[in-house]
Image (cartoon, rainbow, N blue to C red):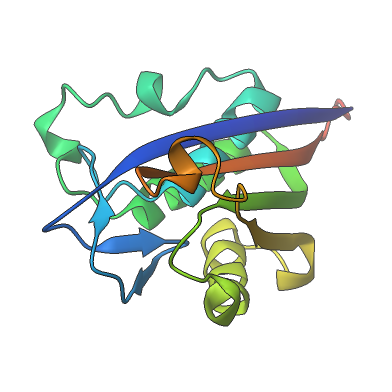
Length: 162
């Protein structure tokens, strides 16, 4: 059985926080505000994976009311979700994600993000695609008020009975 999931996340750009996307600290004068490290790319991917598996969303599994997740590295959350999927007999077929940001420029970091995500999900890097776009100076992304990310994934569940 194959299942598709989609995810979306957005965080506000603020002074005094690091800009972490795909597990990479990107040099930029602002960072993303959030309870965790606010990695919108990983959060969107987690939501896509959980959605495809019928397991809710990131806020359900890792609530921002729990102090355990304060400042947590989102890569650790992705590893936990990946393991949950394995236990539930899901295999990640592929992940496709898009970062929406006017600045900073993402192109120099996309391959490293892809490698991080693949490593954390224990899949080949060819199964992960990360791209970026701007919003042509329109909306909150265009005004550089925040960064958003969208993701879609395909899971396959082993339904063979023994």
